[in-house]
Image (cartoon, rainbow, N blue to C red; front, top):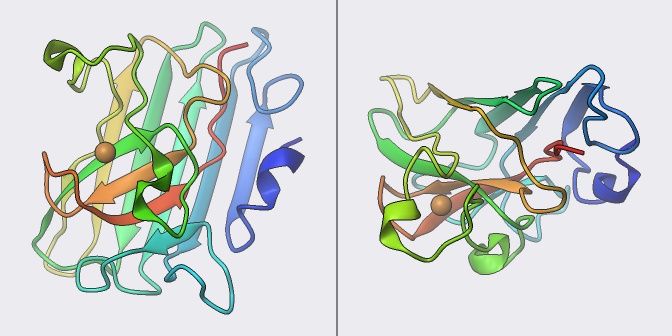
Length: 181
Ligand SMILES: [Cu+2]
């Protein structure tokens, strides 16, 4: 059911439940999805859906898991768990529009509910922010809840920035988010 996405998810396990055709909800039962991967540098011999661009902050083999739950009405929660990152570090994290690529810029800009370049639309209510600070072992978690769901094909990755508010990209995970049909 996610055949168009699987090519980019070679080293990730994806468990998806519900929805109708494709990854979108059909309005009948909502949709849920959980996927995880271990980070690898672009061009690694074994490709991964999770790419590191900065191995000091996102070491190869660090782990990431993303879970999405969407109700039939579209309300969506996204949960993030990580381990093996730099201990005691604050990361800025968002859902971005495009899949990850060898070029850190490939994931594009933030997913926005109201698409706007105005500063007052850049916030955790209009975007999906999953900022976290790792514990002393390098583990962390975050959760974002919204009354709305993604539009088809416009949410495709979770980007880890080097710190909250920064544009620098330390890592990226391509995620098969479901959308509101
Ligand atoms: Cu971002």
